[in-house]
Length: 168
Image (cartoon, rainbow, N blue to C red):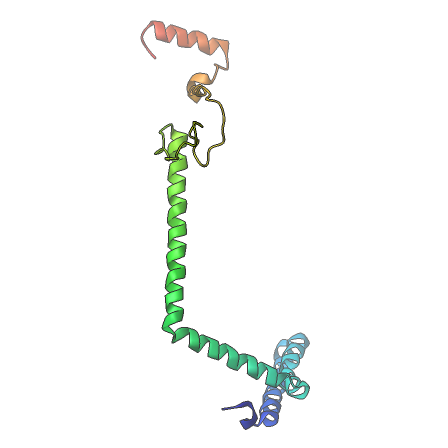
């Protein structure tokens, strides 16, 4: 059905009339604010017809429906959706793999070295690591319980007595 085959003035006028009746009922039951708001919404169909915006809205609707039906029924489009899904999965898997590699390096284990060919006597440098001289590893921190000093000298005396007697 095309735009010109529909009698738009009676349709828009009818929608506006029904909306105005409902806005009167809302005015009586819920108050002036609800009635006025519904009356404002009710006037939109006639305003769209009188300004000519209705034909533009019709064209936008038919274009959207044509796009969606072309999207749903086209095997080429579904192939594109599948390739997009594959790209997203590969990206997420690479993020997990990079996260595991960073966790290994933080825990002290060495990740698999990347093989980079040496160029004319230059030392091999991994692709992502900045060039820095070798540094000695940082000393490990003591556990929190051992690092905490006793709060009171009386308690340290009691702890010493208990350790001498074998009670700890």
